[in-house]
Amino acid sequence: MSRLNFHHLHYFWAVAKDGNLTRAAAKLHVSQSALSTQIRQLEEQLGQALFARAGRSLQLTEAGQLALGYADSIFSSGTELMALLREGRRDERQVVRIGAVATLSRNFQENFIRPLIGREDVEMAMYSGSLAELLARLRVHTLDLILSNRRVHASAADPWRCRRIARQPVSLVGKPRPKRRAFRFPQELAEVPLLLPGRDNDIRAGFDLYCEQMGIRYRLRAEVDDMALLRLLARDAAGVALLPTVVVQDELRSGLLVEYGVVPDLHENFYAISVQRHFESPLLKELLRQSEADVLGGLPA
Image (cartoon, rainbow, N blue to C red):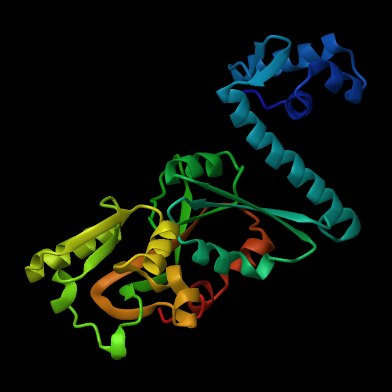
């Protein structure tokens, strides 16, 4: 296989960033025809069309989106390498791009990135989506890290690095009870309306199994996939919510909500997913060095 022509890749990258062949040619000080030829040669080498015409504009194909992700990584790494070797420093502002599964606790996400919040030398980019969508972006290096509550396994095609960064018991949480009357667990589970994660959630599956083993038929008030919404319902609706306490850490500290009890042998796991790299970002290393207590907001794990 012939070696990739990085000169052609740079021309493609410039056009993809600008979105206009004529303007990109002017910025590169080459003719439009020469630029078109370079990109066509790159497409022939890759065996894929990178652009599709839509009227007078150019749109990236799926292969073009993939190539742009790699080009971004290649040229940003080159700029960083020059700064590091010539001046002994990295670029003044480093970009950290983190994806989080859409249903993951917002509190957990904020706790995780807190060491970088407010730093003048760091630019944070946070993205939300399904695990499949985020893995596709990690695969083409448009993300540096994914936060998830599901483990992924590496393969020859996808050398993921998946590490568990925190583990927390799952609790039953609700509003303070009159006269501080204790919640009788598990006896009262059948007597109170419950706010539960959706049926596809591992927590819900474990809870349903526990109730089945205990012979408990509970009253379902609502089932919610999104932990942020479950947090609001726990705070504002009448009912007992099943969730890791990091989701409602602020409400527990203020006394707006209290923990009724912990479900035996039921935990939420939090994972950081990345791809194998020869040189890992120092900023990611800093985030991943945090203690479990830090990313769980100081609440017991």
